[in-house]
Length: 477
Image 1 (cartoon, rainbow, N blue to C red):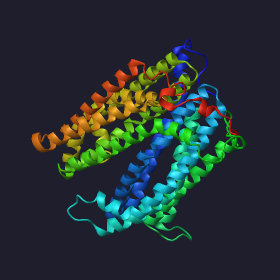
Image 2 (cartoon, rainbow, N blue to C red; image 1 turned 180 degrees about the horizontal axis):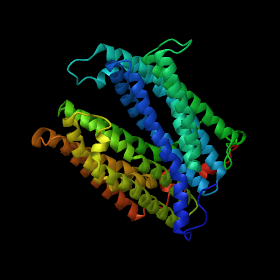
Image 3 (cartoon, rainbow, N blue to C red; image 1 turned 45 degrees about the horizontal axis):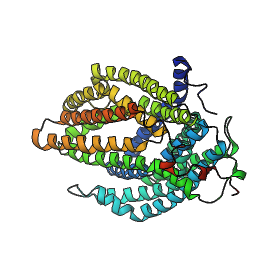
Image 4 (cartoon, rainbow, N blue to C red; image 1 turned 180 degrees about the vertical axis):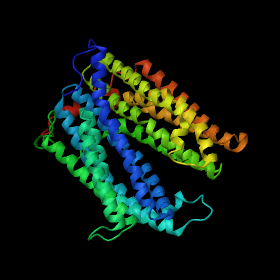
């Protein structure tokens, strides 16, 4: 079941083939997610400015929630990949099932709270505006409440993808996303504007389409696990149908730092956006263009980071720590090569990319200067994203959290604040702050990776996770 074959003596060529086999579905999945996100905004945009603003604010709150829910996803991927590498399928089964039960219970609790407090959350996000548009609050509240209900299926869907990645199956999450995206786009078209027997529901229709896509994705994901793939099938008759606290503790021990990391990242991004907004409309528009370019350049880093998580986890589970280290470094090299190529294009031809978004000369000039900084940072981005993924696969999520906290809050926001209110050098100063943030994070992550202290994994570390024998008890005990 593990994708890698052999031991540390396998050739670099075989290692690279394994990496590419694991990475490409995740890169395509990230690309599809970005494209569908753009299509969503285009469709909602036809409803008016208030609708765009409502969806934007609601989605920002959802990103914070999803980031907080990464505990089960990251912890599950790390544990499952290591158990699969160790060829302990029964233990992997129990982690899979507990992750699904835990995600469903957590979704029910958080989504109920979110549904009740949606108006307060929206007003909080808009509190720094001079005047709060009641239409935006009303539409965002309706949209957010429907999306919160759908997250009862959305969180298990995230967990299912994490489980499949831990098993080494990157293609099935891609197929599930393709189906979900088709449901989402068709649902948007039919429900937003009203086609055939369906009434025009506006922004409510957009929320229902998004929720419906999550429901379909979650149901198909569960069916995949139960019916099985070529290499894996969840044996329902051999697992417990109640929560096992000791397994959830192990998942959360790995996953909670990942959740904190995401909360740190999202909160810093909100404050960073507020600081950029202080520069004016031109800078704000230019920054959105640069952020969009950055998200596209991230795709290889995301895909190879996911591959590193699984390959490192499986290698450690198979008691091959040196193979795990080789996978981490080779994956980083491949991602850096691809992202450096993207950086070269962005550095020498930034006008071509910016021209896709705006014809305003002032906005274009501002965006081009910052885009060149993003281009130069591509190798650093690759190292941070992939080596962070490798550390997550080993269960060493705390150091990724430390690096993100120091970089985002200790470097990026501090320098951005100084740039905004003292030196007043414009948007380019903000992206210099991002570059310094990325440099610091890269140094921390690289130092931790080279130390090798993560190579023991989590299965053989009773000091951290309690007695591993606890997870080895038979379901009937």
